[in-house]
Amino acid sequence: MTANEGVHVRAHHRDLNAEGALVGMGVFNNIIVIHFKPKIHTFNEMANILRSDGSLLMTSFNTRQHEEKGFRKDFCYTEGEYVDVNETLELVEYTAYDDIRGYFDGYVFRKK
Image (cartoon, rainbow, N blue to C red; front, side, top):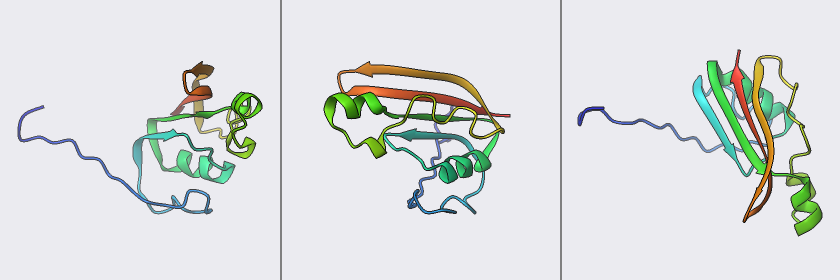
């Protein structure tokens, strides 16, 4: 990258619980979702706006966080909940892990 080149990041503020919130936003190379549990319609909308060969990375607390730390269950991923939800996304990796903050599930999808 030269001094005249810059990195461009588009940011959007949307209510991701609202159906159709992502419609009309264009196409994205990659989407990263951290500490958010998308509803299935939002997950499918993310798949729809992802460029072919683009990546969707998601990570958030899982149900073990609820069981052991009392975090709201409706905000927790259940085991494998997004696997095989959208046929346009190929699962690259799914993992359950923990660190000092708690218990998580992580997904990496690639758009076919």
